Image 1: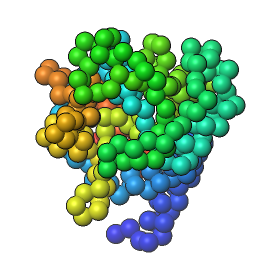
Image 2: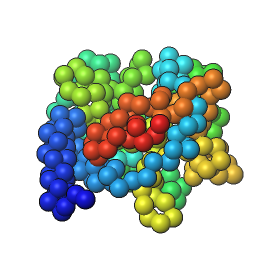
Image 3: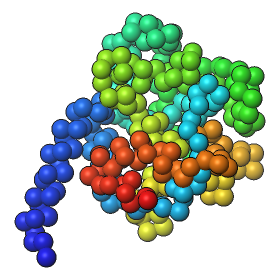
Image 4: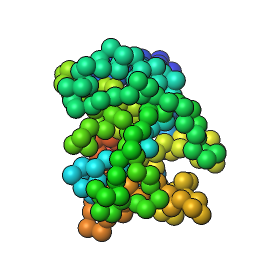
Length: 245
């Protein structure tokens, strides 16, 4: 049996590994610390992660999942504001003419509210053949003309981890980390049957986006989303991909 000293040593090793990695992959240090603690105790919804998906194809979806921007925590909001304040001209070289306010206050029904990235009008129903009817004709202001994320493109341009400036909600999509009935966190993938954003006049979000749709002939979600799940595993010091298989 491993003694208490062994457990403490293992915990310290994970902490050292995390701190080293943390500086390399994200500008959101406090958020990443919370995410790491969450991952270490979460349960993997293996059944949900077997749902077949296909890899995202930006040439077809044109950033459908980005149509309403993304809700941010306070750290993410501050970092994004500061980044644009210091790097507006660099964003312009990527083809982005950002508004003065890139972070605004948003409210979506009684589901969520708070700071979020701003949006701009975009005729998505005209440019995407199977764009969901109930989605708005808008896009996140950081979506580039070729449908790539400007926050990610800037990080790559600077030689940083691609998700360095990207809020975790964005790079995790279509995965979700939610609280179960017992309060324990769970890594899952919403389907049409359990999507919490389905209402009489709104037919859901995650399973309606191209990368979250069930695809006949696709591969299990945990394989398609191996990059995202692998990253979560690194952050939390777990072999989440191994647990999914």
